[in-house]
Length: 155
Length: 155
Image 1 (tube, one colour):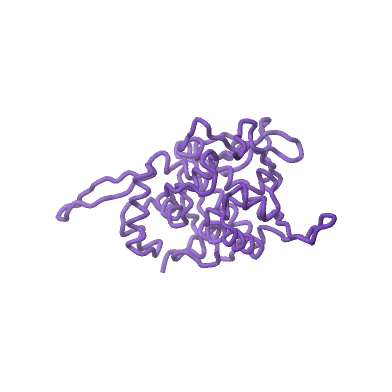
Image 2: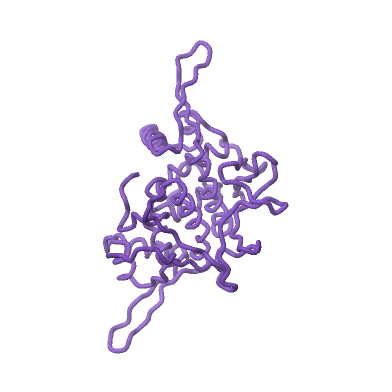
């Protein structure tokens, strides 16, 4: 994290990848979002990630403001840390959902599964979609993308 | 690519990260989507990526079915390869847009810029959003995600 890739410091995609471009990082966020995991041991056991790698990724997630480290204590045991997603971390739900939809479509598995997202307040299931100004859904494969006019030309 | 992370072969997110979990891979796809780049030299110059890394990433993108290698020839020069996004590659527009929206919100820059997506057919600008069953938009930070009932428990 923090090492800008290529020449792209102005591009919002490159800036995001700088923070979450690591697969373990996104899988930790997924685990927190989908299972509500907060403890080191839960992340380690469910992801099968090596402890030293997990330690580094959690520290980076805290440094980057995606998780908050809190101390909790169960009766009779010593204080421990837990890791809770911040608003910035929770907002990666779009990235997680986009990856999930893509995987379900282009890497299907008979036993494959995906998270179901829903609105916390209403409980209504929600899906991620491209929506045009007049409220129509548009297919991801039919999107064109253009740099906005103010995009600085490469020097 | 191809090395399953952790214990998650059934999870559609882990399967996607297996293919596109590398930051350079997503930046190459972004470049193809946003600038229409197809040639090795264009990717190399605009991304500032080392030739040997780019060679490997393009080969992997072709192997994974995200890009198609085509041969073209300009008059008076020898045949060259170009790399064109397939439907699977184009459909990563959701992942690119999700990363872009997150970066614009949580890593803003005064000179920062992002791609504008629009529907290829109608030309209508489109944005990525969570939409509930009754057509309401829902905030990414207000999403809860749950494993669907058929998600297999870890052994």
